[in-house]
Every structure is written in structure tokens, then in C-alpha cells.
Length: 110
Image 1 (tube, rainbow, N blue to C red):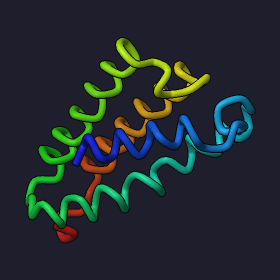
Image 2 (image 1 turned 90 degrees about the vertical axis):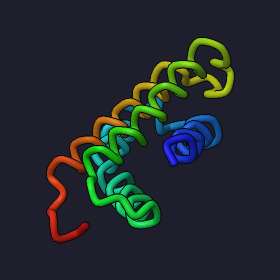
Image 3 (image 1 turned 120 degrees about the vertical axis):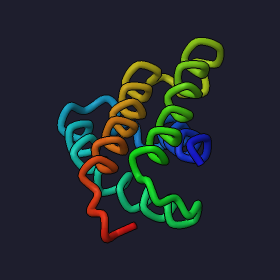
Image 4 (image 1 turned 30 degrees about the vertical axis):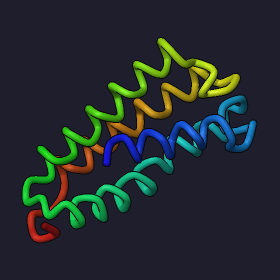
């Protein structure tokens, strides 16, 4: 699941709108919208896996995404196109957002 999240984000970095990572305003809006994107996706993922512990499950998902992000930055930076630094930072921000969402997740959702 973490690999799927990472791959979707990496493809957005490569093929998404140019202004996502070059304009400060658009980049700020994208960062602010990350919880709105990440939280529902994690919720669906956690329901599909049947996990009852959101912090552990999100930790595994985000650790996988971060490890793949690090490997891609080191060995395949062209995967991100021209926005290696900004795109990788956005993916790391999304991982942190996922962990934060899992900590504040209401128990009755699980």
C-alpha cells in the first residue's frame, strides 16, 4: 500500500501541472490540501487491510513510501522530472501528514 501511495505521488510530481512545484502560491495550496488528499486515501487503505491500529498501519505505509522516495532520489532522480527536490519534499510532507492523521484519528472510525 505504501508503494502504491508513493508511486501515485511520484507520477503526480512527474506529470502534474508545472506550477505545482514552481509557484510559491500553488505549492503552498498543494501542501495545505495534502491532508484532504492523504487522510481519505489512508482511511480507505486501512479499511481494506482490516487494520485496527491506525498508528501502526500508517507507520508501515509511510515508512515504505519514504524508503522508496529516498531510493528514487538517489538512484532514479529523473523519475521526478525537473522537480526532484520540491517533489520529494512534497512526498515527505504527505508522509508526515499521514502519520499526523493516524495519531488524531478517532477510535470509532476503526
